[in-house]
Length: 85
Image (cartoon, rainbow, N blue to C red; front, top):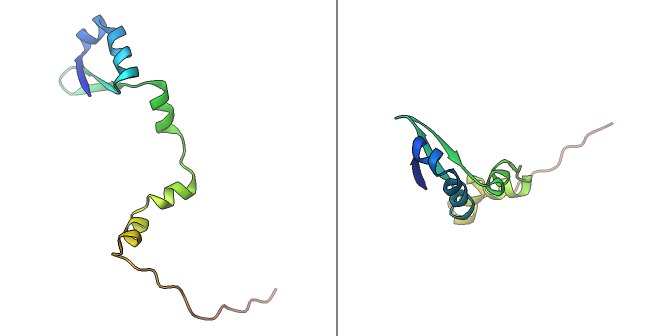
């Protein structure tokens, strides 16, 4: 990620935008500590798009541990409970 000073980014705004579109996020430092990041709209929409539940569960630490074999899931073998309505 390219880092720009605020003054340089103001003078080269079109370059900052072109790089955000073509190369990825661009950081603009506003003083010694504060900064902002300029990103493309497509990148922004990807960041805010909610994941569906299946994708979320597949990316979970438990799913990775089961796939790696570090955790095993033992199915329940007990009887189901009778429920009266």
